[in-house]
Image (cartoon, rainbow, N blue to C red):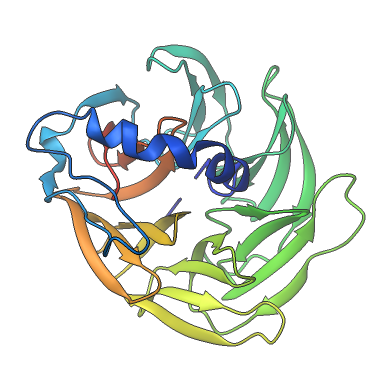
Length: 298
């Protein structure tokens, strides 16, 4: 199942614009939750102690919430495969719009101020979704083979398209839609999200072992980045990959330089969407309860 917004989804812009906010956001968190995030010559990254999902601040509750994306205005978009809806929430978590979508909406990444790419799992396609009207236009049609496309990602100039049904990772030029999908890696199992690392490689979350792959899109080489049972969404910030592990019911942080895994959140019954907000905090989705809660990173 799914994974985010904001997935790539403005991730490159967020990383550059908000790197300086991460420490202040964490240092202002509740006592006992926060630990200073430090990187560089002073020492290794310090992560907060694990927290149970139910103890985290509740942002919103959306029936059968799956994927989540934060747009350029700070509004939060939530897809519901089971509920067949796309919900827009304000930065405070109140409902702004609810759009029906009978094609089982999943992954989302923002394309412009008023449009986003939306994965429709039922029809195994990606559409351009008008965020004002809820209308959509077909962009990419994949070849159905069981469960269709799940999550989406983005890097400069390219949509990252995990072709879940075929086990491939594709790239597609962003608007003005000048090219067809190009397969850059195969044999991934069921890939469900992808995001750039920042060094030319890509991270791909998969619903099978090893859980998190690293892909060189030039050579097609695939290597394990970390080991999880079944992951959904992945977000990269400051050399750390944040992963929603559906199989383990956790949100974890993977230090990419060392492969060290730190568990940040436990007890997520159905860990699905994961997105980073402008203040450096994360929205974690539990599909079973519909809860979207706020977690801290490292």
